[in-house]
Each structure stands twice: as structure tokens, then as C-alpha cells.
Image (cartoon, rainbow, N blue to C red; front, side):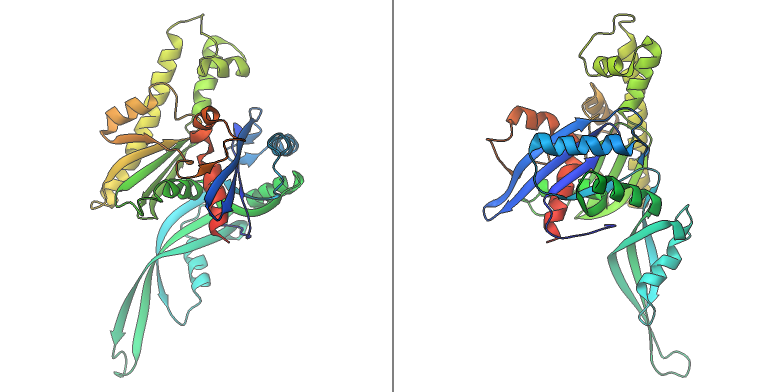
Length: 366
């Protein structure tokens, strides 16, 4: 977590295609979903996680808060894209050393940026102790800890841009997290009634411009990867093949209008793009199988605005041989029925998973 502040209830997921908001009340009777909604963004407002049109985005955020009548100003948001690195590393550490400095020194070899240009955060996942007695003249104990660390690095300029954006929208940036961890939080909330799952699950978030994968087991992230696949690929290909505008291509993709110029073109585009997505996911599955032979993935949990592209979930299940389940981040929340329509909630659920995880994480930080 790159920035943290207590007493938050609103998760704000600023994606490349739309902004999603989730507001949760933590009451004596449990957590209640108070507000949920989204607002679209023009193309290229955010590119690979980089904010290109801050005034437009800030204006849309203000409009979203106004439309939903959200009064809370403290928000949790997230960063993603090529300027964010999430990596599990091993560090040897002696108790007389400063742990933070040790990790910062080790981090340089794992980060493809100048370490002075990034914000670093880390979490100790596992500790083991190696004790060697009787060194040198036979006296004393030399104790070394071996630490498994989850390292997170984000470019300072990117963090500053998101903080400024949220402040320019009239809000307080209480938490700035990484989207894959927020998604993991939403997934674990789904397991609240069952406790921690023993199964190894791959969380697959298919957005407009990024396909994110986070493999988790018992609350621990084993592996994360982001790649430049997403629903925007389909939109751009439809625009090119049918020579139509972005708005028209979006409607064709979502089934709002029929592609009359070439009845078969849409099916061909979908098959080609979805096949590339599935191959990327299979590569991640193979990597985990090779590096964690005793922790085989048993289920794929999908979410994101593009996870409902026709045929994707069925094709993914067929090609991987794994169960595919769509994530509903609101499953274990009470719902304010007077404020939220159930049909709309079912529609928006996979798109709002990161925002829900952010709102839940902020509650946990109290």
C-alpha cells in the first residue's frame, strides 16, 4: 500500500475506459453496500496507467460523486500499468541491519527503473532463521533471517499524478494501492463465510487495456503479471475493419448495433482476440506450475469490464481444463435495496471488483 489513511469507505477505480465507485458502510450488523456506479472516459484519457487528460478525468469523478450523492471525501484508489512493478523476492537479513535499507538495496536489481524515481513498499510474507553457532573463536551466535518479501514499486511521478488528480476532484487520497491487491481483497471477501480457501486460484482481471493475473493461495499472492491485452483491442480492430468511429465500434462490440458491412467480421475479431487472451493466461498457469509444483491452480476467477466478451469464459474453460467462475464482489455484502437496483448490480459486478476491494481494504485499515 503506497499511501494509507484511516476511516475510509469509498473505493475509486480509475480505469482507462471508465471510473468505478463503490461505497460501503461498516455497521454493527455487517458491511452494507451503500453506493455503486460508473462513468465512462473518452479514449486516450488514460494510457497504460498514465493520466493524459487530468481535467477531463477530474470532472468525470466530480460528476460521478454528484450523481450518486456521495458525501464521503476520503477515497481509496489504485494504480496499475507498466509503471508499477509487483515482485516476490528473497532477502537475507541479520538482526543488526536495518530491514528497510536492506530491502531498498536489494530492490535495485529487480526494478527496471532508477530506484530514486520510485515509491517502494513491501510486505514480509514468510520468515525462516538460519543460526550458525561457534563462529570464529567458538563464541557467540550468528543469526540470519531469510525473508520472502512482496515488493511493490511505482514511479513517483505516477503516484504524484494520481494524488493530484484525486485532490483536483475535491477528494482526499487516503489509500493508493495496486489494483491486483485490491482485487485479491474483493475475492477474499467472497470467502468470508468459508474462511481461507485451501485451493490455489488465479484471479484474471480483463480490463480495457490490461489483462491482470494474480495467483493466490491462503491469502498470499504467489504470482502477478500484467499485459497489454484487453477489450480496447476489439474496439480498435472493429474501427479499422469496418471504418467506423470509436463510439460506433463500442456499440458493435457490445451488441448494440449489427455489423452489416461484413456479417462474419465480428466473430473473426472476437475469436482472434479471445484466443490471444487465453494463450496469455495459459502462459501464466504454466509458469506457476513450473515454479510451484505443489500448488496447482484449481480455479480461474474472472472479472473486469471485458470478461463478458461473448465466448471468452467458455473458451478459457475449454482450453485450460479449469473451472471458470465470474467474481461477484458484492456476494457477502448487505445491499441497500432502496438505493441500488439488483439488475444493475448484477450487470456492474465484474467491472466493480477493484473498486469494491479498495473500499473493503480501507475498512480493514481502521
